[in-house]
Structures are given as C-alpha cells and as structure tokens.
Image 1 (tube, rainbow, N blue to C red):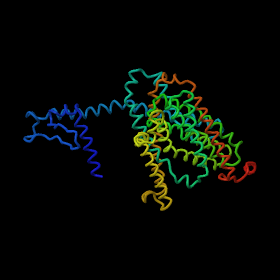
Image 2 (cartoon, rainbow, N blue to C red; image 1 turned 30 degrees about the vertical axis):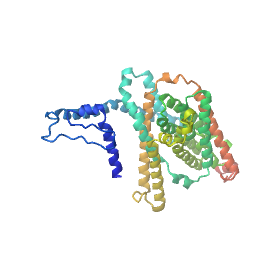
Image 3 (cartoon, rainbow, N blue to C red; image 1 turned 60 degrees about the vertical axis):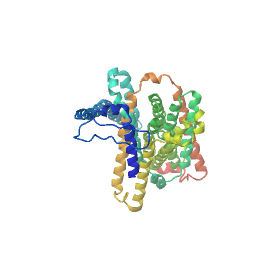
Length: 462
C-alpha cells in the first residue's frame, strides 16, 4: 500500500513539475531540472551553500508566491460562498414550504398529525427557477455561479454517497421478498420503454434516461444520481424532475383510493403502491393515506419495503443507463469494453455501494450479536445511519437541487415542449400497468398469499 501511495504521489508531482506555468513561477526559487520522459522522477533541489537561490538572491519571491497561492485559495473559496449560501437558504425555505403544503394536503383528505408527503426537493427547484428568471439580475447570477457549480458537483455527489446508508439488504430479507419479481418487472419496463419512446418522440437521449430513472426507481434521487454520470445538462434535469413531481403526485393522490377497490388483500395494495408511485416521499404519502383512511398498517410497511427494494436497484440502473447511452452507433462494439465500463461507473457510485454494504453488514451484526461491528447497540446504530442518510438526502441533495433551479434558464425549456410530458405520462402508465399485472400474476401463482377476503376484512373493521 505504501508503494502504491508513493507511486501515486510521485506521478502527481511529475505532472506538476512538467507544467510550464509552475516551472516559470518556481524558477527564481529553486533549480528545476529538465524532466525526461522516463519513469524516474528528478526532485528539484536547492543549490548547496547558504540557502540562496540561483544567482545569489534570497528566495523572497518564493515566499511571496506561496502567500499569493494561499490568498488565491481563500479568494476561490470566497467566490463560491455566495452561491452555496444561496442554495442552502433556498433549500431550507423549500422544506418549510413543503411541510406546510403537505400538512394542508393531508388535512383536505381528513388526515391529521402525519408527516408531510411532499418533498422539499422539487419545491427547491421551482423556487430556484423563479429567482433565476424573474428576480435576480445578471450581476447577481454571475456572483453565485461558482458556488452553484460546486453545489451541483461535489455537494451533490456527497449526498448520493450518504444516501447509501438508507439501503439495507436485511430489511428485504426480514420483511419478505415476495415483491421482488414485480419490482424487477416494473423497473425493466421503465428502463427499456421510456428511452425507446423518447427516441421515437425526438427527446434528447439524456433527458429520456433521466425520466426513465426517476419513473422506474426512486424519483428525484435517481435523477440526481444519474445526471452527473451521463453529464446531463440543466434542461434535462429540470424536465425529468418536473415529470416525476407531476405524475408522482397524481399517483400519490389517486392510487390509495383506487387500489382499495381493485385489490383484495393488503399485500397486493402495498406492493402496488410501492411500485406505481415514483418518489420515496410520494410512496410514503400514498401508503400513509391508505393506512389512515382504511386502518391498515400492513399496507404501509409493505409499501415501504417495496420502495426500498426499488431504491437498491439504483446501484445497477445507473451503470446500465450510462452504458445504454454509450452503446449506439460506432460505440456499439465497445459497449462492454473495460474503458467504457470505467467511464460508466464513477467513483461516487462505488462509494454509494460501499456505504450501502456497510449499512447491511452493520444490520447483520446487530441481528447476530446485538451490536453493529461490535461497537454500537441497535438504538445507537439507528441514530448513526439515520443521521448519515438525512445529511445526504435532506441537506446535500436539497442544496444541489436548489442550485439546479438557480442555474436553469426558462429559455432552455422551450425547445422540448409537451413531448417530454407525453413520454413521462406514457412511462408512468406503463410502469403502473406492469405493477398491476405483476401483482395479479404473483397472486395467481401463490407467491402473494391472500389471508382474508376483502369483504371479510371490511366486515371485521365495521
């Protein structure tokens, strides 16, 4: 390991010392050798003597340049501060608005005392769009632009990595895996049908892939995770998020009532709600509505587990969609090449998988020995991974999506028009129909066992 680290440091130093700009800046301070193209690294050394630089002059300029470099780093950080602070403030405001609006929405349905089913992330995008296009001046936009770029890159990827703490294989194994075939069928339908339809409708491929990820897997989180991998622009992200918010909210309001009339048992309802609604917060809102309207807690728990199972497939869907984008035309022969695979699976996705594995192993060690990794009891472990996932999903993604809104101009949204929403509507309908068909087939083959007829259950409730 030491040799690998040393080799990496030497390679980085070699590239730095070959930089013409750096050599010009350091020339008055140290005697820089001419670096050959071989693998050997010649370390620059100061001439022997009294510590003077070349020519006998004291190395005052070197110290001033070092101070200038530190000042440059501070100046760069200060340039990013307005944009990051603006996105963070907008994110905080969006969560307050989402909570208030969600409580009012539940109150209209006769539900009180429950958490808001509306996510603050799409609200942050909408607020950002409004500020960018109707409030901020050009000078203010230029002022916050460096911070917005940081928010949509480093902060976004940090949030995605932390979201891995939400995923645990133990939850699926504990609460049952009967819905996994339906999950696979629904995700496969969305990931294949939506890009195909988007191509037929003339949508940009990146936009179609983002809509497919958001509709099939986990809404805004999937869009946020996929966008930097495929280098999607702000127009693609904005349209994809708009689709997830529009049709996911429609499903959240509609499916709890219809599913009670369509299905016979809570297992069917829970799996269907976990598949037919897009975003995690929307699934929880739909399941909570059903739970409080029809007094059925089992539906809520099964919907949550089904949605968690969908979220786990995010780790496989990101490289699949990235490879799918690189698989057309002249690149088709290189589809499974190692170079393409490396580009399609970036480091933060591997870190996301690593954090999810840590969560699963910790849950397993608690189940076996009562302590996660022999250190934390169940309550402490729950607080720890909840804090990590909340930091990523609530704060980092909120700031990143607010930055997306602040960086998106409405002029870039005019070229696509209604086609993106037609694709989103058709994709949502296809995923919902696949979920319904899968649930009915699994029930027919005995993988979802009905415990009591619907009429008997309603009679018991009365």
